[in-house]
Length: 273
Image 1 (cartoon, helix red, strand yellow):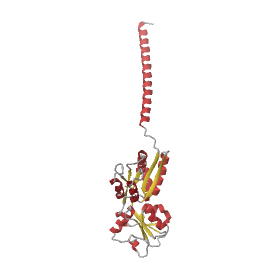
Image 2: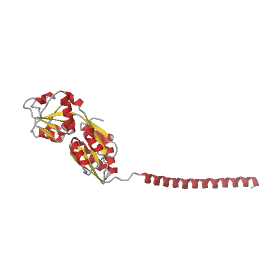
Image 3: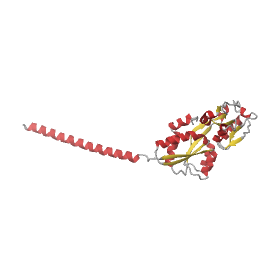
Image 4: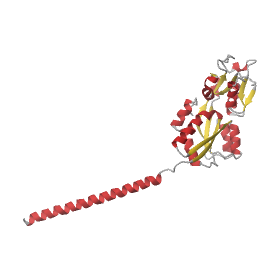
């Protein structure tokens, strides 16, 4: 073998050794990088949600929020959503009075203001849906109610929500816009109580929300009236300042405002914000 050939072979052997060393370094670096990436991803992962979220919500949200609560619990095993439904004004007063709650969903900005003015909300409330009034009558509409004015017929037993409750304030706004005066047989403290009077046949009609007529199914018959467009209620939701489970509460609010939550609310008859 000539000296020239020996030099060429030696150069090739050195080149091969260098390439092998580079491959080994590359593999180690890649393995180390993967380990660091996995570690970083693990370190940045959000903590698992757990515990109970207490939600105070307007009575008209009962069906849709109950469904969303169950969905939330399925998505986040180890969590529980408990609800207190009622008139928004009563719930707001309870919150400012110190009742323990994480989330408040009101049927009007005015009732939410009771909480924000007392500085009991964490951050600004956000409108997540809107709701419109409808007349609920007995099945078959025996009173022949076809308009808001028909509710003033002599002998017709009509129920309204109390004027301090969002559905009552909205009903009064619609009546005022139509220059109508109506004396109901009773004022109820929340919309479900007003609807219940018709379902139990203790009243011929009640002014409630479209969502409540929808939820009642064939127990009542709905009558739309154009004046309701002048009294549409915005529904705000807020995390409360003294929330004991703030992170899980934030996640529930996120579900309500998500496309999935909006679908559930829309199917219940709520309008988009």
